[in-house]
Length: 125
Image 1 (cartoon, helix red, strand yellow):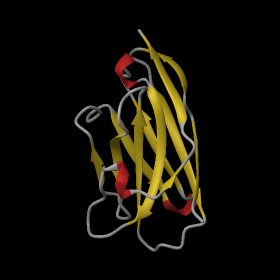
Image 2 (cartoon, helix red, strand yellow; image 1 turned 90 degrees about the vertical axis):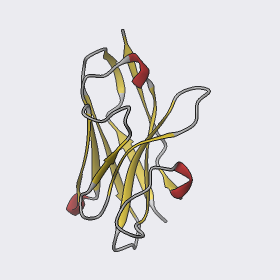
Image 3 (tube, one colour; image 1 turned 90 degrees about the horizontal axis):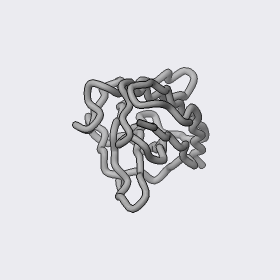
């Protein structure tokens, strides 16, 4: 049973920064895709960043250049560094994990079976 726990969310002013972390446990896969998703009220869950077992990142256009995903595989932890935050970044942020198939990791929420409980990020103008 894969268990994911996010931390690091909270309120921040526009232009500020936050770092989210996700610690995982319980998976037996040798190659793992890790992803960060976000969901604002009334909107679909959006895949914003993924990282593959070889540390290859992928980003949504909405966060490219502002957010950085990284992982510490020894610690089973994935981070999302968020800079230049905007009010539009306000959402619940979720960590997700899935066995990696192929070279790239998908950014579709439906491709992931394992989810954390989420951490709220609120950006004020």
